[in-house]
Length: 179
Image (cartoon, rainbow, N blue to C red; front, side, top):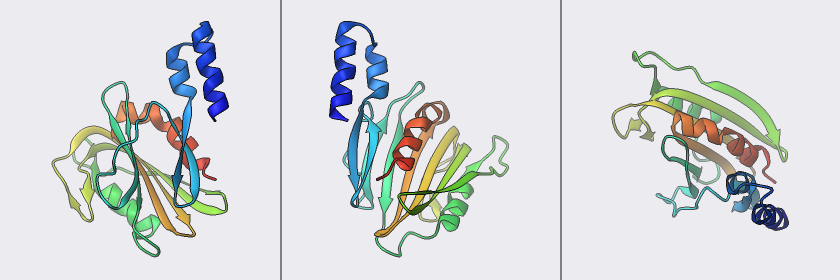
C-alpha cells in the first residue's frame, strides 16, 4: 500500500495524475480485531464516539459528510444480521412515511459470512430500539454484518445519500477486502 501511494504521489508531482485521483486511489490500512482492511486516505480517522465503536472515520462527499463506524459488542453480542436489518429498516421511511425495503446481499469473505445491506430514505437513526431524533430526508445507510470468530462486526456508513453513494465502492472494498 505504501509503495502504491508513493507512486501515485510521484505521478501527481509529475502532472500525470491529478491530486483528486491520488486521494481517490490512495488507501490506509486499518486493523479491526485481528482483521485488516483499507479505507481511503481522504477519510480521516476520528476518535470513536462510543466504546462500542472500534473504528470511526469521517467521509467527505459532494453534499456533506457521512460517518463510517465499525461496531463490536463482544462475542455472542449485538444480535443476528436479520435482527439488525429489521431494526435498521424500522428507522427508515419514504417521503410520505411508508416503509423502505432494504437491498440485501450475502457473501463470504476470508471464510466469514457477510451480509451487506443498503437502505435509503428519511432516516431517524437510533441507538438500540429508540430513535435519536426526527427523520432526516434523503439519507442512506450502507451496513455489513461480518460474522468473525471474535463476534459479529457491524460496519455502517451513513449520511446524505449523495455522499454515501459516492463512497459505496470504497465501503465495498473495505468490507469485501477484509483479510
